[in-house]
Structure formats: structure tokens, C-alpha cells
Length: 286
Image 1 (cartoon, one colour):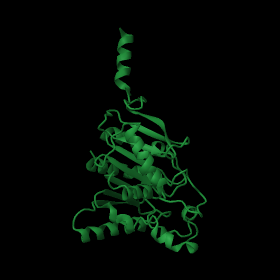
Image 2: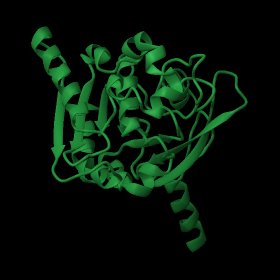
Image 3: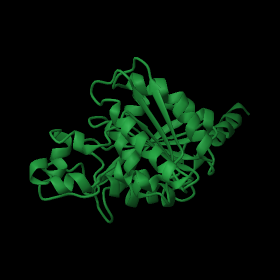
Image 4: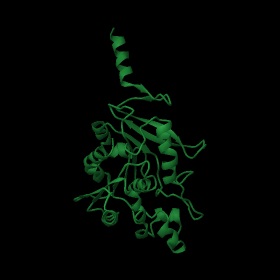
């Protein structure tokens, strides 16, 4: 009798994805492998957290890490799973080190995080895979992205490029204006030297100019006022651009800006703003 009850409890706690057949254990992280490009044999590991009350209607948040981070960064450095349970959200953490969320590679590109430019991979491979293969709820009203540091730039770029798919983005201490970082090796490794390619630096993947695409995407910006690595002016500049678009267009461009006192460029800052960020997603996704 006790054995039968135990088996029944295990069945209740474990659901099988009807599309892929993977075991989904609500309240747990799993790792799936996503193709590095269409028809590629190479894969990218992706960590997914399923909330304790997971259902096919749970919204999905793609969480991007910093430049040298990994798919474990959000799990290890924050209690994002706690808020995923609170708001019944799925958290998706792709393993994407050493990318600036570019949309193109060039002859001068010396560091390629993988087979496809990162922004294109997320929009054309990862997001369809999460919907069609993993069976997650992926539609504009239910999909959000967040990111820290260079991952914040990633969340912004995906929101700007895939506005029909993304409903909300949260950008924490991000690099947005590339022209302020013309000597930064992260960007030089993708776009080449600024002096050799000034037009490319000014026009390709210009996150500030492309903010005009965010009319129907809710935006959450946060920055620590003691951030010495990425000055808070980066977030101010983006907020000013969105405010200007608000005034010009009269409607749309819903954004929130949060300044965190005494916080620096680290995961402690991310943890401090997590309650507000996840409440923002809860308000703007369903």
C-alpha cells in the first residue's frame, strides 16, 4: 500500500513533455541540448527551471549571463528559482559565453561564440526550439528576456529584433552604446577595429538607435549607481531615448528605470533588483 502511494506521488510530481518525451520535474532544473545552427550536429547546452506549479500556460523567461558566465550563473548567483515558483514562470538559461549578441560575423571577427551570431541564434533557433521541441508557451504575451552586463545588451537586442515574439525585456547594468567602447576587446573581437570600420560600429547592431523598435515591448532598466565597470550613463542614455520616443509617438514605449543605491557591477546587484524585475515580468506577461 505504501509503495503504491509513493509511486502515485512520484507520478504527480513528474510530467512528461508530450512533444519530446523528456521528464519534467516541477521545482527542478534540467539541461537540454539545442542545435548550434539549423541541421547542425553541434549543440548548445541550455538549463531550464520548471516552477513547482508548472503547466503548459506558464510564461517563459530567457535569462542571459555575463560575458564570462555560463548557463549556471543565474542559478548559482541569485534565487531566481524562488521567484519563478512565486510567479509560476519557466526560466531558460542558454550557455553563451564570449558573445556581444551580434547579428553578423565579419572577416575581422576573431571570436565566434558558436556557429551562428548570437542574436540570430536566439531568435531563429533557440526560441522556435523552446516552442516546438520543448513545448513551452512561447508567444508575445508570454515570453520575456532578462540579462546582466553583456547579457543585458542581449536581452535588449532580441527585444529590438524580434518584437513580434518578445513581450517584455529586463536589462541589468548593460552595455548599450558601442561607440562608448571602441577600445573594448569584446566588441573589437567581433566588429574589428573601430578606426578601420567606423561606419560598421555606428550602424550595425546599434542598440540605442534600434530602441525605436520597442514600441510594443515592455522594458525594465536597472543599474547600480556605484558601477565602475559599466557607468550608469549607459542606462540613462537608453532611458532618455525611450523617453524621447514616448514624447514623439504619444503612445507605446512602456519602460521602467530603477537606480540601485550603493550597488556595483556584480551579481549582488542582480539579486537586489530581482524582486522588482520578476514583479515587472509578472505584470507584463501572462
